[in-house]
Image: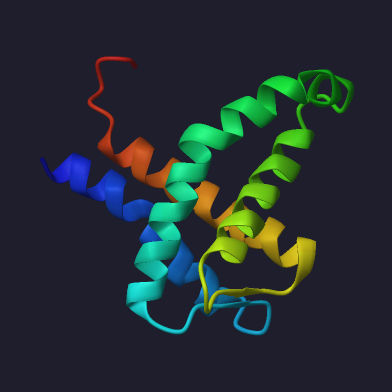
Length: 118
């Protein structure tokens, strides 16, 4: 149960961390907006990102996988555009925010795995 809560809280924690790391580039006014932003980002990553990733597979192969960073940044920017009050200052800020979210999610995933796959 704790593992599930940590995995659900990871995007929220990452977004709050990104606003503290890059205060001039990413701004979220309060924790409620950060939670809404985390839910919208998770929904976009769950439903929209796979479709976009499928159609951009030739470009991803051509760039040896680096286009996935662009996709993450686009999902971060789209979530910021959909949630009122969230400010992301351009593509570089979206890329930085997406990298923080990916890093925190990776860390939580490594902490919560059960060791059967080692």
